[in-house]
Amino acid sequence: MESSMKNAGRIRCAFLMLLLFCATASTLAKSKKYVFYVGTYTDTGSKGIYAYEFDAASGKASPLGVAAETSNPSFLAVDARRKFLYAVNETHDYKGAASGSVTAFAVDPKTHNLRELNEVASRGADPCYISLDKSGNYVLVANYNGGNVAAFPLAADGHIGEASSVIQDEGAVGPNKERQEKPHAHWIETSARNRFAYVSDLGLDRVLIYKFDADKGALTRDGSSASPDGKDFFSATLAPGTGPRHVAFSSDGQFMYVLGELDSTVTVFANDAKETYKSVQKISALPSGFSGKNDAAEIAMHPTGKFLYTSNRGDDSIALFAIDKGRGTLTFVERVPGGGKTPRNFAVDPSGAHLLVANQESGNIVAFQIDAQTGKLSGGSEVARVPSPVCLVFLEE
Image 1: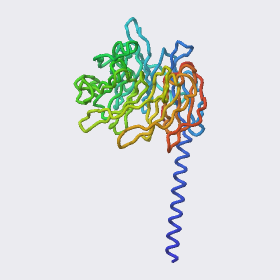
Image 2: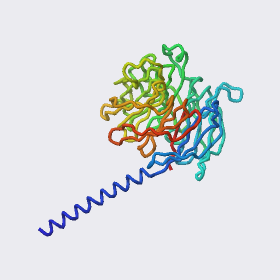
Image 3: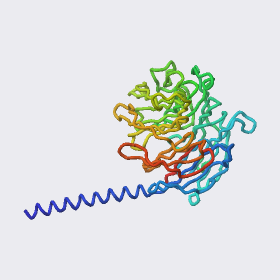
Image 4: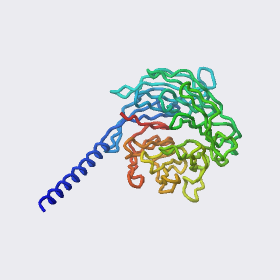
C-alpha cells in the first residue's frame, strides 16, 4: 500500500514538472523578440527599408528607423544564418538598360541597420520577387515586366555576383488583355531538394518548372517535374484568367497552393510519386456575392502546416483556410478586415503567434493574434506607420 502511494506521488510530481516545463517553454517562446524589415515604394515619401523590433509576448512593435535608403525595395529576402538581406529594386531603367536591380545588405547585429554591399542589374524590368535557394548560395529574382527570371551567385561576404542564368518565360498568354498581354513572372522559389525552380507567371496562367543546377546556378527548361493538366509538360497550368501571383507549399512538398491574383482564388495541386502536379481543388478567397474589384496579393502557410492565409486588395481582408493534411484540400474558416487599405503583404512571426499585415495605401502595419487551435485571427491593432509598405520579413536570431 505504502509503495503504491509513493509511486502515485512520484507520477503526480513528474506530471506537475512536465506541465511546468511546457508552460515555461511556451512563455519563453512568446516572450521572444524579433526584428522585422519593411520594404516600400519610394515614390510616396518613403526612404527605403524600415526596421522594427517585435515583441511576441505583447504583440507590439518598436521602430528602429530607416534601416537603408534605396529605391523601391518592393520585396526582401533574409539570410538569417549569415545576417544578410537582399532586396529587389522595382524599377525599369537601371543604368540605361530596361532592367531593375538587386541590392545586397549586411545586417548590423547591434543596431539592425543595413549596410549596402553592392547592387547589380536584375536583368529584366520591374523585379517584384526575390528568394534564396536552399543552399543559400544564390538568390533568384522574378522580373515582372521583363517576363523572365534570373539566378545570382552570392559570395561568402554577402556580395551579389552578376547573373549566372537568365531565362525568358514562354507560352500562350491568358485572356485578360490588360494584365495578360505578355509573360509576367511574379514569384520564384526552389523546390525542397533544390533541384527545381518554380515560377508563377501571371501572364501565362502557369507555374513553370525549371531545372535548377545548384552547382552552377543554372536554370534550364529540361526539368523532369510535370503536370498532366497543361500542354507544356513542365508546368502546372491554371484556369484561363487566374493570373497566378504567389505560391505556398506544404512542408513535405506534396501539395502546392497557387494564389490567383486576377480571380482571387487558391488552386490546390497534389504531387504524386513521379513529381507531377495535378489540380485537386479551386476555392475562392472572396465572400459569396462579392461584386467589386479585387486583386489577391499574398499567400502563406502557418508554421504548423494546419492553416493557410491569403490577402485581398479591394475587399481589404485576410482569408483563413483550414488544411486537410492528408488530402491537401482547403476549407474556408473566416475572413477578417485587414486593418487598413490594400493589404499587399503579410507575414507570420517565427513564434507562430501573430500575423502582421502591411497595408499599402493606408500606410500601416497591423498585428493580429493567431489562435493556435483554430488559426483564427483576433486583435488587429496597428503597430506601425510607414509610407507604402509592400513587403514584410522577419529576421530570426
